[in-house]
Amino acid sequence: GENVEQHPSTLSVQEGDSAVIKCTYSDSASNYFPWYKQELGKRPQLIIDIRSNVGEKKDQRIAVTLNKTAKHFSLHITETQPEDSAVYFCAVSSLSLNAGKSTFGDGTTLTVKP
Amino acid sequence: GAGVSQSPSNKVTEKGKDVELRCDPISGHTALYWYRQSLGQGLEFLIYFQGNSAPDKSGLPSDRFSAERTGGSVSTLTIQRTQQEDSAVYLCASSASGTGRTEAFFGQGTRLTVV
Image (cartoon, rainbow over all chains, first blue to last red; front, top):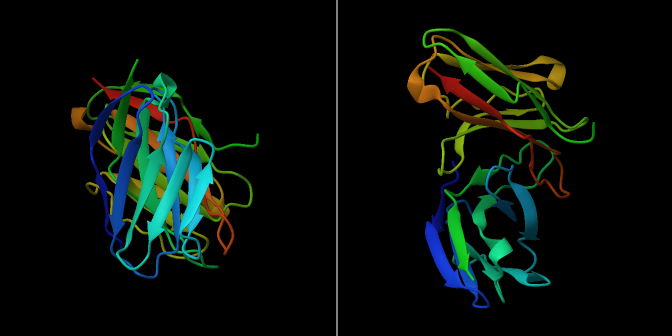
């Protein structure tokens, strides 16, 4: 089955700095890569996703880049703010009619210091 | 409702008792997941249902854990003879299948405390 590794497990940055979280995966058939944010005491929610036919996607201060050849993708947060402090999970799945099981990374706890 | 609903929100049970946790997925979502999350930890995969296919039970930690999905909709996670190490938040998620976006929508979770 799919194996997803996420690094780092914890990340502390100063407000205004950038944060980068990276995930690697093993199954070359995987083609959908979402990122989820889980604030303290709340449920994980999707913040951005990318499909394998795209190399980069950006939404305001967050972006995701994908390297299909190397089988890794990264979440980039620029101009970090204290409200970005949360646990971030990457996930990997295959979009198809009958499959699509998502495999999650172990999470990265991001702390943005004011 | 429009989202994934879980009940109860909180459950305190005595060691050795059985518990049932319920998940109502988003209508029409064919995929349903159960995860366990201990304080400050990641998402521990338990079980995955997809349509009428046999469920992927590879994450269930012991034979005390079982899950059913009735009619492709509501799911129940049962823990028999609960132990203190079963204490955690149990999260359910559902997603649509197909070649479109298949993001997972999570419920608010059931916080289980075994005393």
